[in-house]
Image 1 (cartoon, one colour):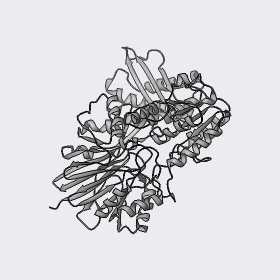
Image 2 (spheres, rainbow, N blue to C red; image 1 turned 90 degrees about the vertical axis):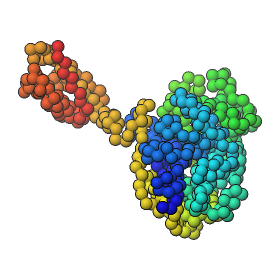
Image 3 (cartoon, rainbow, N blue to C red; image 1 turned 45 degrees about the vertical axis):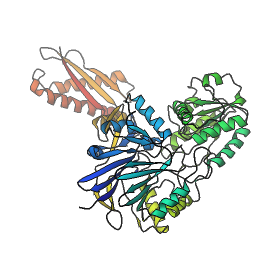
Image 4 (cartoon, rainbow, N blue to C red; image 1 turned 120 degrees about the vertical axis):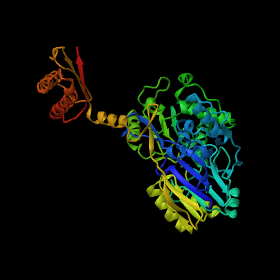
Length: 552
């Protein structure tokens, strides 16, 4: 049996977010595995009560004895957010650069898990040896500190896993993209490049943080009253730009929102943001003149609990906003957030507040490669094959067409769960399927997509809830009227509804012997049908119904 080199995405292929990729090398009966990234995606309103979703890790949990470690490319939630949920089932080593390591350690601290002996901090542009893999971290540029591509060296050839990246000639904070090293890797030969597909439809280049800074300063100079900037907390270059604009316009700056404080603290701990003015507490900022303060806050996507939403609805304890102030949305709208974000924009405009977004000013650049950036990477790496990831199916299909334009011999479209044999063979091929899926974090409990708790909650949110409690005496008679409770039903004449339903329940009960315990199950089923039928007639809803029989 020959050694095989395998790749298997469990998340992030066919979707943007929830990235989790597996690599394996060895003979089929003795393969060693690594995980690259272990992220989450965020639930929408269609799944009530659930915020986080992560890839089903069952396939790799079954192989944990052959798992060499988790290697992380950078610290965005869609690449590290699931680590504290999945790692306890793996108990393997974790490899990350300093900034990413600080944020990971915090995640485990929140869960009261000590990973000190497992978390290995990797220096920028250095190499770790996980036999049979040799993994080199190559500095790239992205919308967060310390993004890395990974050169994965194996006995049969090299893979380049790009992670998230762009070509930013002036990233402002952190190192420039290590183009020299990427060219050297390309010259030595790359079997397959696993590559970011997010902006494959966008022509030109993604743009530079320096250009954003220049335009942001012009915007802030123009605004005469209170300025609120909202952005992704993880974009430390954008954070530094807010500090820069405050200093240049003679304003103080205050950070608002837990994650904004967390990222600022982590960046400082790793030696970044050393030459910026000191932020002031939001409670003290209340005493500063409107034209002398900038607030940098979370909630750029209109999240209900984000600082920006609370400020706009006047429920934030320390920050308020009034007519004549300006709000700068220095971020893109993540697909799916349009409705709540435009609602937030409208709320602000109604209050006489000026709203500035990327629609009206150049105050945001993406962290992902546009087509010209992709051309650079292809020309540096010159891969024999390309596997697009980090995109919906439409992005990945377009990326396949792009790879063909770039004369790559063997591009391959994959989806979550596909097991791809990169070696042996002339080209990568999908030869098997791993079980994959999504795990919902329901409260603090991981549940499967089709979990009963999720189905019931969806049902309750759509149809409401009804409960009938029937008291039965020792002689087998009904004691008083049934006690009825209903929630989420459009009932305005409550007494009339209760009286009518009570009569229907009593009529149904007459067809059963209340003392016959063998009939109890059938009686409860019949009562549920009665309640749902009556409610459907009156309201058009068929609620989740609970029947309590209480013998007194």
